[in-house]
Length: 246
Image (cartoon, rainbow, N blue to C red):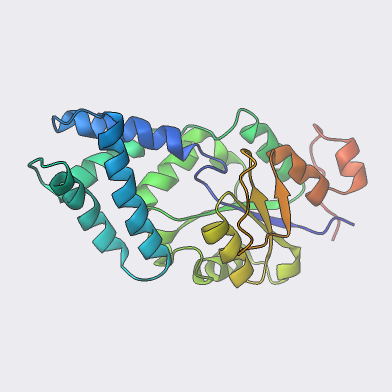
């Protein structure tokens, strides 16, 4: 009997290619404000942004402070004039228009898994950005709901967003739920905090420092078939109406 009837997915760099989307949106934003998006300038922003997100995930700052601070600090660092708050809004508008998928097979995998399990997205970020990207990528067709940290006032790895998602999905047995994501500190630690089995999506075969230990590790999303599907379902990949029998 298959173990998992519900799969929670991270969005960025698991289902959606955040690195590509960020690069496009940031370049557009910088050029709009007369700043050349060269490698050093882009890295300056990413360092500042990364530090703030790390603080947010640890509960050291609030989301509104991150939004207010990141471009303000960036403009100061590159000695440029402008409104950090205005720049941040422009950037979010640009980011929401880039629904790039993390891998060519993402929609095919989601289509197969949706035949046998309840799927949902649990992601950190801003609701108007993430919900639009999920919808325009084609993922919305296969997921029951999209849970975005801003909307539910809780960032992974805090278990609150997972509790909210499972309650909304009507899932009571956490042993039947699998959390899939690329971030050990956000997705995997978050799943562990919520009492869930976890699957580290690691397509680049990065080394795990060992502080956070996932239940499984995969490098291709198709490997989820073996974890989620029953033998007869595996034999019939490509067919419809293969829901688990409860």
